[in-house]
Length: 315
Image: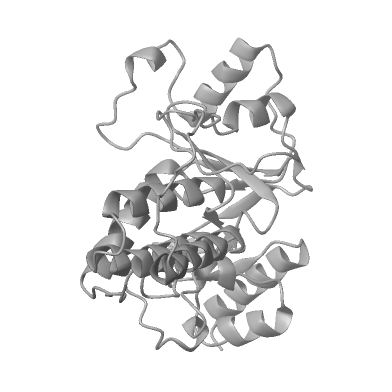
């Protein structure tokens, strides 16, 4: 075993000992090592996808035996799946060459994400919450780790977009991950600079990062005949909606895609209008906690793929 592999194994075990769920990153890269395909392209040949596509978040583990098996195979980097780990990580970045701040952040003293967070705290009349587990990134940025608060699941945000804290500040929570301390990218390592337990995420930051409530939704009504054909369609629809509603964290997008394929086949066969299928699936995806853009993309992909194999139901 090489020294780099020992270091990566140590980093993975150290993160898991804190209760953080880890998974392999490609050597010297930030991208997940497994799986090598998306839910949309999953054909079930990967043994871990026999019962449906299994992504990196679901594969993340704290099991030392699994960690030893993975990190003695290759000098993988170490990803921490923030959602299963109960973490929210605030990523304070540095500008890339040529980056210019948006108008609202063209202020004296604003140079990087740390400055932006300090300004956000000052505007809120709150102290800078830096007494927490902290990792310096190879690019000169900082990862601040916090405990995920009780209440709604927080999702990822990207600096400068709606719902984010500001320019050059990303956050990683459910559906996201960060490279753990000890991981090396392009020869430069992530390193711990403040080794304490993650602090609770301040309430005011949790409120700032909470997803906006969805607008009131009208229930989707579908008029189906009451004969045997109609009862079959009603059962098929109910089965797919139940599949989405009962999917576990980390598998909900896959469940939505597979149900979109199934109902897309029925729509292509003329048994139900495609627009009604899209409305039903969109409502189910949003109710399951998926993000609107994610739901729209997954539903469209699944319905499109289902239409390639129309399913005709005899009346």
